Length: 560
Ligand SMILES: O=P(O)(O)OC[C@H]1O[C@H](O)[C@H](O)[C@@H](O)[C@@H]1O
Image (cartoon, rainbow, N blue to C red; front, side, top):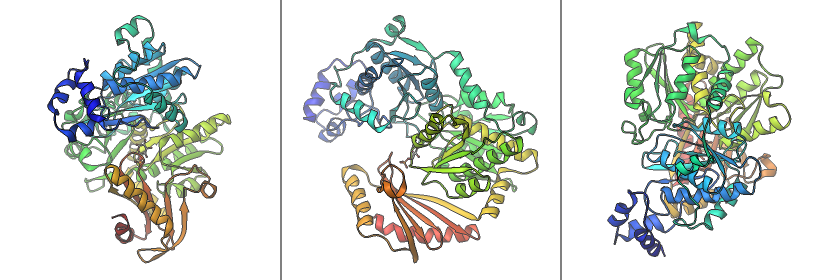
């Protein structure tokens, strides 16, 4: 079967000149052929993601055409504006795939609003809402290595697509022949027919206005003298992040030169994920040289931002997603209360795997903290609920431990542009009062306790890996843990039981131990991994770390 499909591709008159040589090269190599043709990339709520190349299990113009035809069939049943917004990042072929998708939509009579240059996830979410589109497409593989690309799909609310809509699109994709099934006209023809239009300057300006309106202490940065090093990691963050920072008066910005301009090969950071040290390495070197207060890095589609902060001894320390979430929540609450801009009954939202320290901080400021499943769309969902009740202004902040932040309702996915803006404003503020982010973080720990949050992950690649993960989770349910590392389990929350959690069913187990520590076990929704999240609370960091190490050592054999 897969051999027949391979031969069909080999014989076809393929429009992408890179694909033919790759197909010829693997002739006779069963393993390589099987890998590319035995299965198709699966379209889910996060769209598509895969390695670039030839075949049904790869990202190429044909797989993009097929997926977009599936999306188009769904859009046609939706009424409304019959418009789709498109953006793309700096990855290899991102611009080609974006224009390919536009050509398929136009051929189906659907209007397109596409950015004239690469723009990040929040810009796509914003344009989807601004033009009242039925859907949005962001061509990106987020923070994956260079050989990947992908296609994030958005619903009319600017959130990543719902399960129901994604299932319909998937069905439609199945009915569409990958090589010949999609309707298609060239991008130029679509523009000529007036179906494809670029995103207007009005939309871009409205996004910047919406972000800048969320400054907590407007004008503060003009005089605070913040010194910044920024790396867009060769992605789409450069233009929007520097635009906003310039507008707010931050002028002392050194951009990491090797990572300044779009470059889909990511030659200086093979895994452009601001969660990991390697991605921040060049920026850190430059920060040390320039003595910057802060170093920021955004991932290729600029929905995540990672930072390193300067400590009093001149060294730099990485700040985790949990710590930054807590710092921003604390800064926004204190600042808005001081400025008299805190709404009545404020709401913050975080995922259930993000730090409980944020619950304590929210309580301190009288903010309702809502805990939702992993996936930023669940945070978007809470904003939508508030909006439906006419209370959208109650939303002040949302975050996930995976370095995603949002501080307003203008988009419905994580936004590293507003993240960067508020992190800089916060750093500038602490600088202006003779303090620092580091000092504030220490104060928070002194006030609420020395929380430590760590995530470990265990990889289970391939089909057998999937089965193994399922059997591990099943075993944990069949034979519930009564103690972990010598600490009694006092509560187990099984998120497969919506009646107990009040949330949609999810494959997550949360153990609370008698000493107050928690251990979360869940398979990742984006990678073939089981993730374990530990929260420990000690008198000192060392104590919290020792507790975490003991818990991790006890859990590890179960995950082998
Ligand atoms: O833990 P995972 O299921 O792999 O998800 C980790 C993260 O992946 C993506 O970035 C999603 O947009 C986030 O919402 C999620 O937190």
